[in-house]
Amino acid sequence: MSLYKAFFKILKKNRFSIILYFVITIGVLIMLSGIYSNKTAKKATLESYPIYIRDLDDSEYSRAVVEYLGSIHSVKDKELNEDQIKDLLYYEQIVSYIVIPKGFGDSFRTNGENRIHNEYDEAMPVGISISLQIENFLNSLRNYTELGDSVEEAKKKSMESLDITKYVSIHAGEAADNGSMKGAFNYIPYGLLSILITGIFPAVVAFNKGEKKNRIQVSSMASGKRNGWILGGAATFALIVLVVLVIVASVMGSGDGASTMPGASRGSGDSLASTGLLFSNTWWLSVANAFIYTLVVSMLISMFANVPFFASAPASAFATIVGLGFCFLGGTFVPLDMLGEGVAKVGRFLPNYWYSTAVDRIYNGGTFADVWDCFAIQLAFGLVCLFVGLAVARLTAERKQLA
Image (tube, rainbow, N blue to C red; front, side):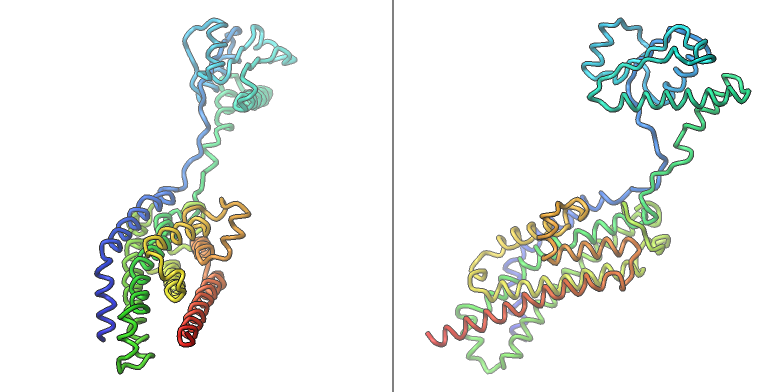
């Protein structure tokens, strides 16, 4: 029990660094998880651009075109000369200069040869888009008038049929209710790495060197029991950190309730509950994923603590280098689908990559059968680190005995 208490006395000496990383982690969770929130299903809207229209025909057909374009874009109503229009196009204050020639209405009813002219900067594809909008409207207007509708009726029907906002929704996925929680759980690894390395690493190193190590070795306590108490202290601290971060992630995730909280993922349906995803299958899988990652980080720290080269390095350096390195390469800070192929190949050798993969699968409606391989790969990484650390510690001890 004395070793257990000693472990937390060492942690107490590093409390300011631990608290600092706690604050940083919670701040990161609050800021970055907001990326995933508020991505609700919403109506699609057409992009609106500043344009200038010169209607030289002033017929009911040309007025219909002007009204249609005005319903989408911002039309300059001030009378301008050609030089002013060219300046506006050059400085991109308007993206399109549309001229409806005289006789357009008569030509539209007959052969349609007197066409609308659209002048735009060819380096800006938006001009082509406006030309297509005009063409689609004119085709629809012609079809309705040929069916016997008046120009006014044809105009209204054409505008309604081309209004995509009535038919198209931008879906942030059925799991729009789980965005904040997904974001928070996705960024938990940064906190686990930083806080656990800052707290556990210097404590374990302290027991493995100097006077503390000598006193422990000459004591009457069995080596297995000694290691058990130290492991118990590390496990207790790791569990406390995990619980705190899970609570923060859960509170953030359920704060939006069942309304609008993941971005481009598809949910499991449990998010429709009044408490969001809290205590649903998705939530439990997320917690299990974080728990496994915590075990892996603990094994990683044991390797660092047992390797003399790493053991002599300051904990803050490890927390920064390992924490940021793993998170950037493993899809914690950058979504997996945005990682370059070269980065992704490196990331596959890190537990963060498989943690993030598991998060994506979980919030895409996945079950344990979909993520067990991610759990297994993370554990395999941790076990490799553990065995490497034990092997190096044994080899180092044998060399010291021979010396």
